[in-house]
Image (cartoon, rainbow, N blue to C red; front, side):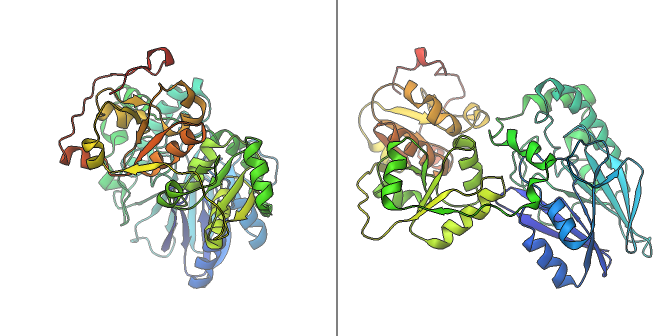
Length: 461
């Protein structure tokens, strides 16, 4: 039995190709199945079964389209209400894939009808099995349980604990192959991604779902949930409709005049260039979301769904990569414009290091745009907490004065600083690592010093 993990860094997920040398099963593929099909061709195997462990909340699935193109069976829970034909499977069903035996395990928790797939090789009984666990048991945590319905969060957390225990009772050498836990917000807690083989037996002593009693596990899991990217609301309906089988709509080239019209109309015009270049010069009214692995997450989170989005860049390759990543979460057909070298980029703002922050005289309005758990773990005294995803909605509530905007590495601060600058605020983008704060002995605190209520935002640090 051969397992080929396929990293999907722009989604923070993994897809898996499992084969016997001739026939293969694909589990939880993204919308762009090109790398999956290339891996199958490189291995010389035929894809005869494609499965989704659940109806995904964080990306558009490519499973239906892949199955249709390859003439393969598409496996998904028989209890899921979907609008297309599929092979509905239930707990205990056994599906042959060549000489592989795929057993369906009901593992509700991440979603109501979540399933895992236990794969064994019929001719190699001594070879460890593999369990494709999707969003159930992950490496060091489990999938979060608040994405389906807030009212079901605790009930699903209890089911998640029971499902994790079910998987934890598998043979210790069973390979644990989850989809989430590599950066996706679908994970119940942040973990350090594992790039080597991980077994169920190793998780028995390290995973809270397998070491903590039920009531404490549920309380800790639910209390640890962070915010949910706003675009997640649209993923399950798209996947129930089989949207991933269609090719993304092509981008719309727009002229310089149309970019100006979009800015004047208050639409989202997003500059993909690196954050240093943006701060040094950009078109007034545009927003910086530097292209990288987190690009689609923050564009999908910040830009209202179905808004008329325009992308700017000076590199055609980056625009193509950005279109690919946005299509993965169902954002098709944005406008695109390639900035000419002669384009006047007249808007600027300052960037600074933590040393320059320390050296700058006078009081400062410090805006911390990290997530709540990061802020609570330690922040500058008096720092105002405004998570990056709230910068557009709540930026006008910030007090007057120059805003020193920071995060953990500078990436999210670059996004937030550009949003606040678009509002007409004077900003300084602290583009430096949070670790430098301790190295420079800049004081921090874990005490709540600044209310999120606008009426209490007024003092400077």
